[in-house]
Length: 78
Image 1 (cartoon, rainbow, N blue to C red):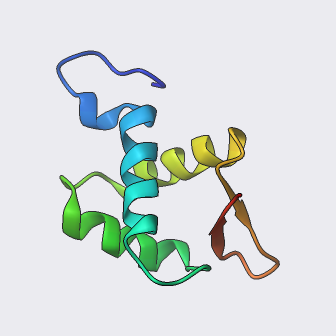
Image 2: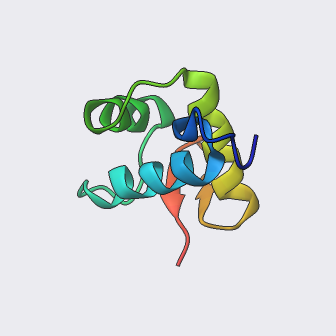
């Protein structure tokens, strides 16, 4: 799952995580609701299920690239 086979690289957590970070960097907000970020993500990328999107967010959280505030909004780590 972290590195998917070559037939579906869009389901690799590395690819999903990179695309999430790109979507986040293209907006002006410092905090964003996960569902709003998913909509922005979908506009620029090949559609994936929301489950894979959340797996990508989990991956980014595990590697300390993003964090959650007390309301469940996502922000980038410095």
